[in-house]
Length: 156
Image (cartoon, rainbow, N blue to C red; front, side, top):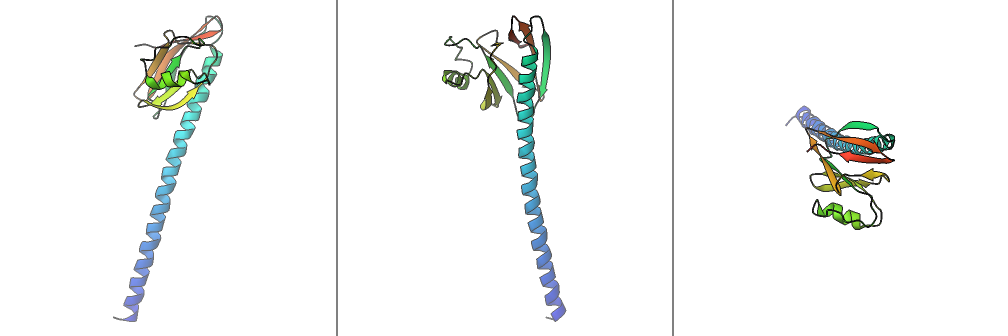
């Protein structure tokens, strides 16, 4: 084997190592960007939801809302009545959350996995628990202001 052929093999090996390292770093970066995008979308959804609820507390106000999310499959609302009987048959997860002392009453799910829980003080779900399901990447329902409370209405 000639000296130039040995150098050429060494160059090819170095190129393969460098390209492999770049692919590995690039793959990890893309996965990290996608994870951060999911976190940003969840934070935006939560802030938009709480902002819209706050804007709808005045009597007679009506808000037909739609939230787009690829990561949330349903949003469930529970009544605020302290110690009241809740429809635990709706989901065991909400029943467990309602028994805790943090008094969350808004639950964000992705395929029956609880992603996050929020609290809004003046909320009435109509029934004990009302859920708005995702349809083609968007969740929509109606918020009605009634005597300082927000009543949630979901088309079924």
